[in-house]
Length: 285
DNA sequence: AATCGAATCAACCGCGGGAGT
DNA sequence: GACTCCCGCGGTTGATTCGAT
Image 1 (cartoon, rainbow, N blue to C red):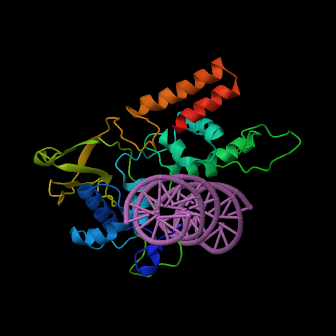
Image 2: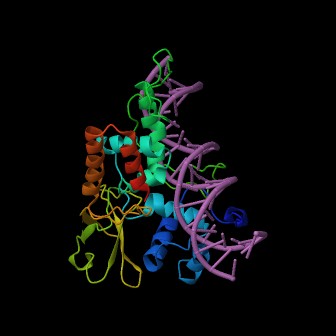
Image 3: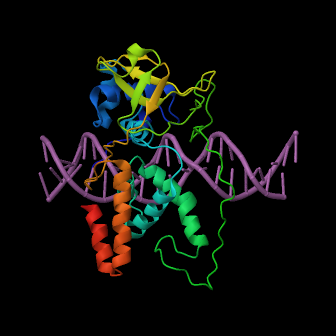
């Protein structure tokens, strides 16, 4: 099976994304849509967003895990935790499938959350996180239960080497807050409020201003950055999350609740493993 | 105040598979 | 069938943070 050489060898940027790179990527995707990641850096030059010297893979990852407008940020809710555990017991480490049932959550986020929180918690409860079966009581597992939850860090590390002065990682503050794909925004200046064909990029700026206001970027039809002033945003719970062919649609909370209810029902009404298996299979269709 | 080590999570890496030629 | 291109997935890494000592 052939594989293209990784772009990182030909002088493209690696490591933490800078706000400028994020802006360029968002601008490009706003204009031309997702996909064609590999050709993105080349095309970007032609579409007047030159400077996006990132490999397609890196662009895709950044978009999918961080910049996508329907990314939901914030703590995983108890309901979501429960659903993750249940789905994991059915699907195993198929993070993208699990993420597909949790609107707004990314596979990377769920994977990280599982590895850092949930698997440890299961162990501490005497459950094997891989098989979801009870561990024998005489098989003590040394588990370090997380102490207090740490404050979230927003710094981006440079993986491979110490950054030089000029390529020091930028500090991304604050992290994107909860958004959905149809975040409705209104500017404080009435004429620039996501109306008249403007495309609002529901994505927070990286610097806090004096008053700690969240700042957003706004593009017009020509995809030119026309404003980065303050917006008031409201989520309307409307998602078109990637469902990996699972057919998930509609309201995010509803769909989450629906799956959860569906599974609870199955647990209540039927102990039969075959039923549970077929439920798992239905998620794969 | 200084040091240490665990925890966190964005980003990287390699691989598999589908589609196209 | 053999090969290339592209996409997406899951595992891993490592800089940074922060609580404990």
